[in-house]
Length: 65
Image (tube, rainbow, N blue to C red; front, side):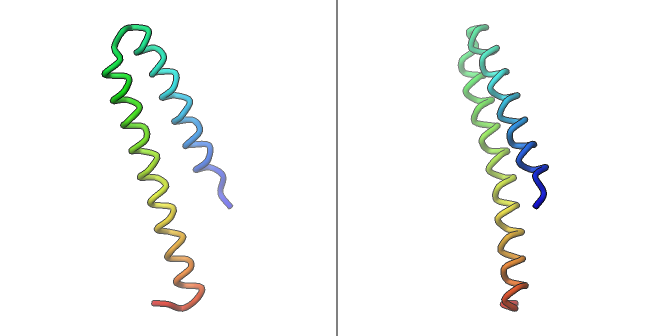
């Protein structure tokens, strides 16, 4: 299994949390909240693509096409 996607998600989470802390200290809480929401959306898109690939593999294994 390719663990590259796990490192991408973890790196994105670390980057967003650091930027979130910086924005909150600069009293820009609305921007920090929007950044967090954008990060969650990006990770969800990545996970949905992986689930789509999983379903295609399962269909091909069980010949469900």
